Structure formats: C-alpha cells, structure tokens
Image 1 (cartoon, rainbow, N blue to C red):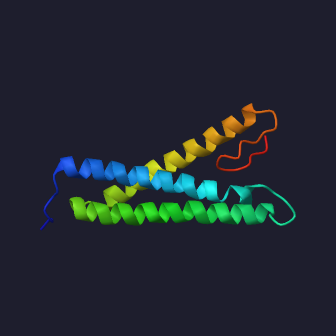
Image 2: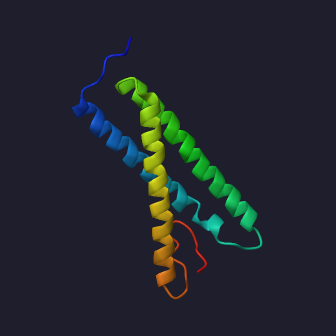
Length: 120
C-alpha cells in the first residue's frame, strides 16, 4: 500500500525551494571557508583538501537525507528524490567550481576570492 501522494502544485515548488536552499547553503559555506584555500605556513594543502572533502561529502549526505525524507513525505518515492537532489547538487557544485576557476583565471593575479583562492 502506497502512502497518499501530495499534489504536484505543492511538490514542485517545495522541491525547487529545497534545491535553492541547498545550493545557497553550499555557496555560503564555501564563502565562509575561503581563507582555508589560501596556502600559508598555517594552512597546508592537506588541511585545505580535508576541509573541502568534509564540505562536499557533508552536502552530498545532506542532499541524500533531505531528498529521501522529502520524497517519502511527498509521494513515497524517497530514493528518487534523494537521487534528484544528489545529482542537481553535484552539477551545481561542478558549475560553481568551474565558474569560479574561469573567473579567477581571467584576472591577472589569478584570484577572485569568491569561493576559494585559485592558482592558475
């Protein structure tokens, strides 16, 4: 027996809101950790990579859990919504990182400091 499905006019805006909130939270987290990406005597490449691993893995796990819970509530399709949020967040992460790199490498000094410090 399947749980009752919520109407599409409710599911679609809530799913879009979840996606937007996840991407905005991701951008905010990267902006808050931008100083970690600048290598110095106190910040090594290993430290930076460990922080970014935690941020990205944490957001992927968060997207899967939120997507599953939302999908189960919406219409019983928890795995489908978990996969949706996982893929959309992954593509958004890729777009943000590549876009930031392209912007940084267009500037002479190779840094824009938006979400991380790049070396071109």
